[in-house]
Length: 83
Image (cartoon, rainbow, N blue to C red; front, side):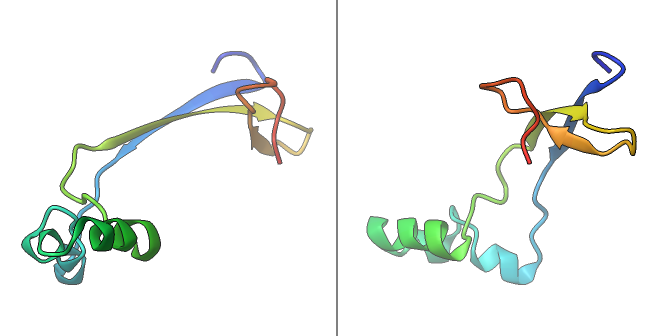
């Protein structure tokens, strides 16, 4: 907690693909066999990704916006809650 109405939520995750997900691994042999353009299209449009990459870490600044205890993410540019 940064204050009674503000908090930072931090979490880390790592993909664990199943057998089908391995087919879409961007560094795998199937995807590597495509041209650069085809690989870019698979990643951008169809969700191919580097599933065996290092874990992803995200930090979200949140603030309490009303008495019901609802939270909103803080806009890093304005410092205000965004919808």
